[in-house]
Amino acid sequence: MKKIAIVLGVIALIALAGFFAFKRYAYYLPGLIGNLRDPIAANQPIDWARGPDVAPPGARAPNIIVIVADDLGFNDISFNGGGLVPTPHIDALGREGVSVDAAYAANATCSPSRAAMMTGRYPTRFGFEFTSAPVAFARYLSHNDPDALRQPVFHDERVDDMPPLETLGMPASEVTIAEVLRARGYHTMHIGKWHLGASPELRPEAQGFDESLGFMSGAGMFLPPNHPDVVNAELPFDPIDRFLWANLPYAVEWNGGQRFRPEGYVTDYFAAQAVAAIEANRNRPFFLYLAFNAPHTPLQASRADYEALSGIENHTERVYAAMILALDRGVGRVMQTLREQGLDENTLVIFTSDNGGAWYVGLPELNQPFRGWKATFFEGGIRSPFFARWPSRLPAGARVAGPVTHMDIFATAAGAAEAPVEHPIDGVNLLPYMRGETQGSPHEALFWRSGPYRVVRAGDWKLQITERPNRVWLFNLREDPTEQNDISAREPQRVAAMRAMIEAHNAEMPAPLWPALLEGPVRLDVPLNAPWTEEQEYIYWSN
Image (cartoon, rainbow, N blue to C red; front, top):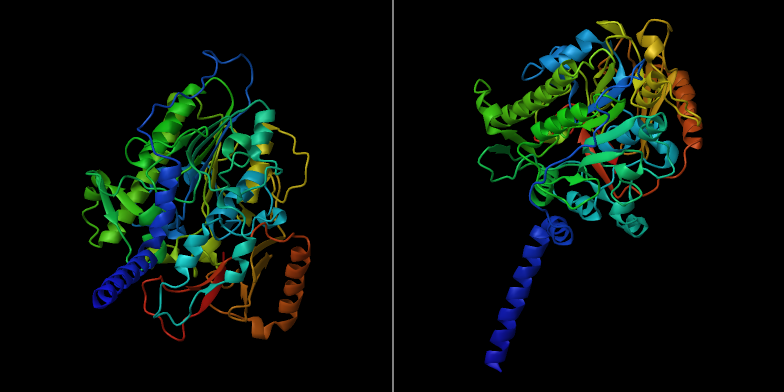
């Protein structure tokens, strides 16, 4: 009996150790399961479909390229007076084209903003309110900062209402700009991040793109973590970062086929493929949606770029700066190719970012001078660069006051192509404003919503309402563009009127397509790695 008791005790200890090991490392499971279900093959060459050998005679519709950075902070580019490194190629788009002073992301996180770009509509108008993410990811994030004064809230009661991850995305019933332009005779191509659904009916090839090269999820590795040419900057204070390092593949897909390893550093790879796609289509109108994943985490730089920035002492800053360096170089390669192919004059290039810089990167100045981060509707979370360059049709160096939004990309691209838009959209064709033909503001009011966190900008006034905390902020952006002075207590009538605007707008919106499982605290004025203190202002972000 004594031996049996000892054996049972050992088994119990092993089981207990196994349980705690599983609990500690369970967040590795999504990546492991994904690799078993969908193995990653070796690199394969990409053969972009080629247009005619000779351009047809006569006038030709303009080419259209939309370049999107991922989590690029307002202060990350030197055009805005900041940045860890100069960004001459991105800056040139603003100097040689039209820049917008007050340009806004349609949402403060990735997926809904991209849905707005593709559809020209508020993403909440078709239920795309939250960024798609695995349940395991939300559950993992809910218990990883025991020292924080404000704890995340995980809604376990909503898990049964969550559809399968691969079905979360932009509904197939939505009309995309790729579909509109393809109907106009354009060859349509996607390169880079998608993050709008992975099931067959939601993928780029089913949403109007003739060809697609990239990844379907919200992030990807830039190089394998142990590659000799990579320099990594892990963020031990960030549970999101730990999840990404544990699960993200170094892989892309070509037209829905098997995943395979790209060639080299991903930002350079996407730029090289954009060059090849432009060259293959130089003799026919094309639409290219080039969605870089830089500088989104995980923070990985090429060794060459890292070593070129030896003057930056902080390791994380240096890796981040090297990622911006590669992003800017990629934009430069695209623009140089247009010049070499004789396409420069007749190509509309729009550059933007999906949202502001992220609090979880741990770098405090990404969105200066604005308050807030990605996952907040303060200006730092939703102010975005917006440049439009089309030498034959837009004045160089012109500025538009705004406000404009991601939804305007659809209408502007359709306007450039003279493509009919036969369904209601929320965006505005910005070309008349950019040419000085139309004066005034493109939008009387803009709205944002993520669960109980709701915001309106009407004229120069901006009202923010949250339930957690139960708080109202009112700012006059003309007098206080960085949202330092909440004047809601002095303006109760204005607060009531703008709250009514939010309610009226919400009444037009359907319920979300899937629930928000997590509400997480985000402080407005400090990054994630700063110590918590009682006086810090914060919001809870629903996702």
